[in-house]
Image 1 (cartoon, rainbow, N blue to C red):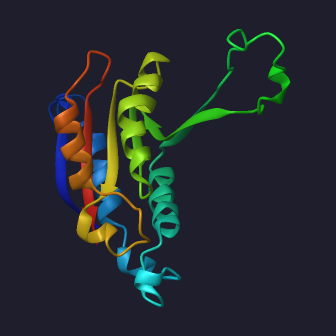
Image 2 (image 1 turned 45 degrees about the horizontal axis):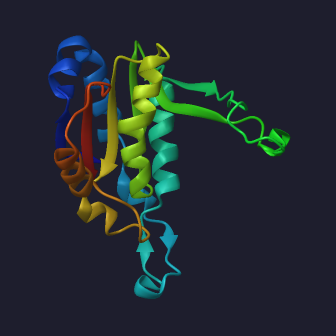
Image 3 (image 1 turned 135 degrees about the horizontal axis):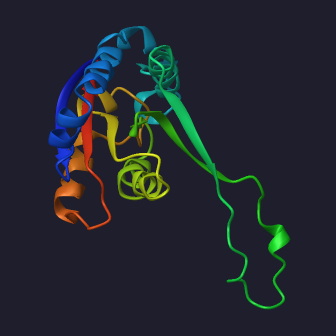
Length: 189
């Protein structure tokens, strides 16, 4: 797998290169060690791609996760203790699902990493909400988001988002005071 593109959100590239150059090199090594072609194992059942062999996001994620784990990166899970004081009188909050949590894919030395080969909303959520939350909870100071470029996403199931779309939205959204530095990698096979 190659890093085909990168986008620096809120000075993410400079912040990560100056504070975590060794971890950045480690991330690049993990990604370059993934042979994406071995993960073109999903036979499409979609009308527009019926019978085509596609890249499996689950298989790619598993291999990438193994690479991070082998390099000492940990997952970080925090429980969500949802407030109940906002319910209207008469509503039973016991109907609320227990055991909710938020999880950072990989964390090491206060640098968080998320890998997203899924729907578009999750890319935006990772950078604009989850990483901010994990920063406010004291786990990370900056983040790296790993997403496919369009040509790679085109060889996955429909609905998988991609780097170019994500960057356009971030550019047009702008930065907020609560955002943290994030380096976004667009990967290809």
